[in-house]
Image (cartoon, rainbow, N blue to C red; front, top):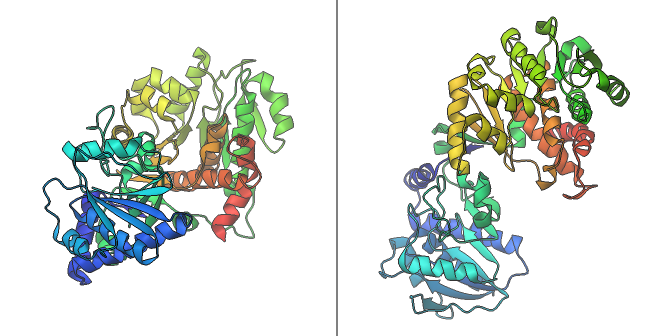
Length: 502
């Protein structure tokens, strides 16, 4: 799915009005109907609503929703937050359409909002129609609402939150803290950043039937990885295939006390479909790995407890991954350096391989084109400097992918994949149970295995992060967020691939 900026979505609205064609008030009514249906479907237990409406079209949506909920025999009260008493034309029409049975309050600074605890607050004050932090009575109203314990639903975007960049917000901003946000047509970029979770809560998307021609013809750098995209990547296997068909991968992993990382990455690599796997490990890890992963071959380090020594004939491998559990010993640093200089195809860098790169930043210039870096936010900031927001980190991620010709897989709740061509893909699978040791090692194994099977780096990243997250989601059929471990993800990779093919 393409993801558009707030300005592009506004343009999409206008394009639809002009080319469907449809009156703007009728498009608003269409939006209000699907928004109301979503509220009723998601929250059938809610019967009392207080809808807070601003002066613009988001307020117009809220006023139409109030009328439609009233028609469904829900108890509805409307609060107008509008100091100038000047409405957008469509909001004014929907204000006039309100049945006389609906009580309307006009909010002012003198108001103290009192609501029963079982009343749901619907935020339709600004939505995406704000560019600066709310002031005056808007600020006061939002601050009051956030102090109330009532369940809150935001329409389109929580009021006070920008669709993209929110670096302008103060430490205690006036932004609605919703438990659920219903986005119109598409999620906004700001939904994918961790610092905005306290405002957005859970989110869902409703389509209001904006014109498909605009979607097809409009370019964007941002995309959401969904099943349809991933299903089109997976290559069918010929009956006459053999192990050589699916590549020979090399994983450099493990050190004393961290052989488990080597085991996890190796198992995941094999489960991703690689034909052959060799694992470069310290000598002391050999018995453990050969027992735990008998399908893998081993190449032993010159040192007992950490990686050291030149990997001979490294170019014979179809793909190389390095990092899980390797530590940062000076000898191991030389292994990373050798691979950078002697292996000329994409390399997957993870964990301590990234920390080694952070200590030798000049090496970034020599990374093989198309290499894949898989940092979590802390590792990312060690590589590229401290960041104060998810949006700022995303901008750096995109810039660094372009600068070095690499793919960066920034791990998180919505793992993002940036490309040398300037695009970003947000993953839609995964759950909080993946915040456990070894989950990243599993991803490294998957990515290395896919590269070895001659998927492109972009295909490997998109398919890899999706199946990784989906396997974790499938694991929740038998586990909880608390009990999920990295081995569960590996064990469900087969079902993950099957689910995509269904």
